[in-house]
Image 1 (cartoon, one colour):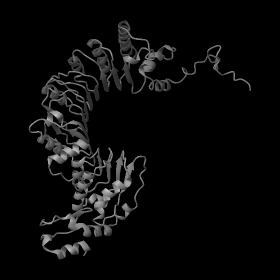
Image 2 (tube, helix red, strand yellow):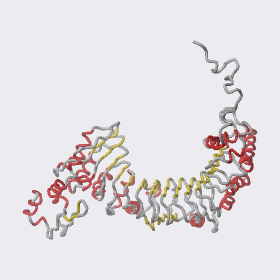
Image 3 (cartoon, helix red, strand yellow):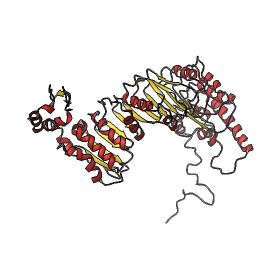
Image 4 (cartoon, helix red, strand yellow):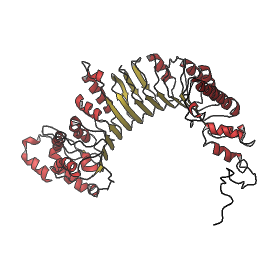
Amino acid sequence: MDSDPKKYDPVQGKAPDCNNGEDRISNLPESIMSHILSFLPTKYAVATTILSTKWKSDLLASIPNLFLNMDDSLLLHPEREAPINSDMVEEHKTSFVSFMYRVLDVILENVPYIRLLRLNCTNDYEDAHIIAWICAALSRKVQALDLKVTMENPSLLLHSLCGCTTLTSLTFNNHLLLDVPESFCLPNLESLDLHSVEFPNDDSLYWFFMGCPMLEDLGMYACDLRQITVLPICFPSLKGFFIEDCYKGVGYEIELDAPQLDVFMYNDRVAEGYPVLNLNSVSKVHIDIGLSDDQMEEPDFVEYYDNVSELVMACSNADHMYLSKVCMHTVYKSFLQLPLFGKLTNLQLGGLDVMGWELLPNLLINAPNLKFFEISEGFYNDEECYARFEENMREVVPVCLLLHLKQFEIWEFGGEEDEVNGHLTAPLSTHSVRVGFSLVMRKCVTLVPNPQAQVLSDPNMAMDIMKKNISMIIPHNFAWVNFFFFSGFVAAKIPFPLTQSQRFRVMLQTGY
């Protein structure tokens, strides 16, 4: 076979010149080259300025939606594995400082705006350098800042940010003590993520939040809130709130006044109280809260159970809800009556202990429109759990099991399908009800729709089921009963106790 003259030449160590010395890349239109540079890390995009006169600094400045990812750990050959000594660290820091000033003050001198500046400093730099870099980005109308820096005086950072009208997203990714002045203001900030930040007092936290009147998304992760007494989440335009691992052994109250909140995730210890709970518009909820060991040792620790229940009850308008195993346990212990979750269609439970299984029937009864039900942390083979569940299910069959539930899904399932089928469907079989939903155990099982669910959509069949089970649904000592199904029709109004007339009970059971 003839050899290909265009293949790599191992002797010369290079491929032959196929283009007669022509630089085809440099002849591309600047719009295409700018598009290519937009996919490169800043380090390599800047390095292209030495390739030729065509790849000049103006080309980098012409990149639309410029994203600057400044990471000092990636600047100087991270592939080298030689041990790093103090001299190398200082050399590294000096080189990074020079690089930053060259990019921001020279190469990007004529840039109209910067979409994002992500600054990750693994080494400590003087506050003056960090402030100068941030001010250079602010002067170029930066829209998003993602900062992971260490500063001796974070107040300088707050002062430089104050009043910026172009900033819409701000992220702090390192421990900073934020002593916020009353004059602090970011009038157009829409997204705020706080990681490991600390506030010295209530006033600092209050002025920080008050200075962000347009905030739509707020995330607080591992923040140090030991010096505050109230966490005020009071934003008229807030749509997403996420709080995780902010409890550090000292409790605080949380005020939740967010009339437009849509997504709410709470993964932490329960607060000292929730004096304000305005969550009427929330649609997606993830609640994983319980009591800490310190809270369990307090004399009035029972009040914390009510705090958890009140928070769950405040989310009664949600259509998607996740409740952890410890949350279900705590809600059961509070003994507060659950509200009607009329809009709830998707329910996911992290797991269930004995008390969770006892609470489950009541939760299903109060979720009449539930369509998808999932247990994400296995199905525990505990006969006491099943016994309590079956006993409560014999009292009342939840409407969602009769009419709306389409899928019951169990993840990390380790048993046999008959084990679950027997315990889950046994209470229904006592009422002569056919199961109209798919039961899926997620080992590696794919959902197969159950055709029986379509049969239950027949109004006549649904009416027969209601007639045969109405005596089990109506409490025997209840004077007036309004039973609603479908869109709210009244099935029966009975102005007398059923226990005094066996004749009427028989008529209802036989379908007259």
